[in-house]
Picture (tube, helix red, strand yellow):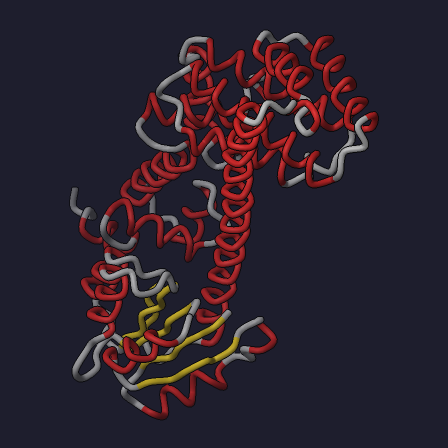
Length: 379
């Protein structure tokens, strides 16, 4: 993780460099500058993953730097804002602008370490997502190429059956559409048998799989015109690219096609109001537990991607955001009605990391839990 330090006090910059073992944390200090303008010039020629900046500096403050970087999309780096002024307004402004965290000087080593590790984890998740999107985009380009290739063969009077196992794949698509497991298994076996008989190369087999996935995306879109195509791609990516469908066995292909057939079947059904009511009840009663959308989909026998789609359509937010809102609402009640410590309340509503709880509370309520408690002490 590439880190840029920004502070107008040289001893602060030097102190940050030795405060933690950056190399041991998988980080590299790639630059240290004395104000926001210098940071912007640095970013013109360097990529950075994390910017740790003071809030008050000459020429260009930390908040101005943060705002310009986000507004002009100069970098997608995470931000940590430092300040010697323990005033909530600074924190609120920084968080509103997209800052990851706000640390009061003098910087505590353990606090900084916790935030850096959390950002490293988020960065890794971002990189995995980016790699997955790249694979999906590559697959989509391949599918466009397949369509072009088939057309070219037809125009030239050739037989696309030499490269595309079209009859078997079209029959397989129909079996998936009709959710017929026996026929799905039959045509998957027939497809692999045909690739062996034609002695197709790995590249051509990849093209065949891309052709099938193109058909499946179209099939899902045809069931519900409100379905987000990116989410369909996400479902296919999660089920196929991650576990190497393209180079996998017929057994795995059969499992994937059966799962997709169930997905298509569920898209045909109504919005699943009854299931959504049960899921909402689970959130309301089990908010303090480590519940997830995947767990709910398994419990109520509904596809994970589809449950996420209909949940967002009904409630206007993701399952995760709904769970967060529920937890923060319960925390508000505990702050007003009890004298429990903040760290205990965080645990009571489902957060093991009290710092993360405070961050989520600020995002939802516009102030820290302590300030909220003080402001409402008389009510």
